[in-house]
Length: 121
View 1 (cartoon, rainbow, N blue to C red):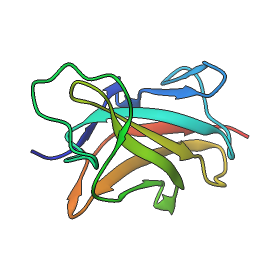
View 2 (cartoon, rainbow, N blue to C red; view 1 turned 45 degrees about the vertical axis):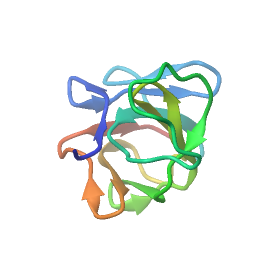
View 3 (tube, helix red, strand yellow; view 1 turned 120 degrees about the horizontal axis):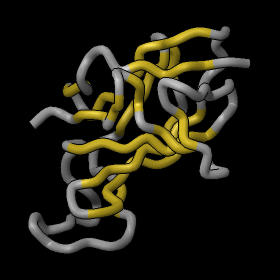
């Protein structure tokens, strides 16, 4: 199973640390720390058994990287936070105003194409 980011209207579903939702109608700015959500990012360490109701935060066993517009978005946490729900904490890189593709990669597997983030300084 390939990893996937949750999106709406082709924009990544993200939340700023102050609780502001980032989507097609609101923008992130460079330096913002965002929580991105997805599924399929693989095993965790420590391992969490499949089908178990899970509460906590178990980091992924494989490093996860994220790019926005081809620029590395530093990942401070990637892990399982609920049954099948992964959270990626990323910092928006320095980008000019615009819409940029967001790609997360776990090992050799990448998330779906066509997911965007709106950046406005």
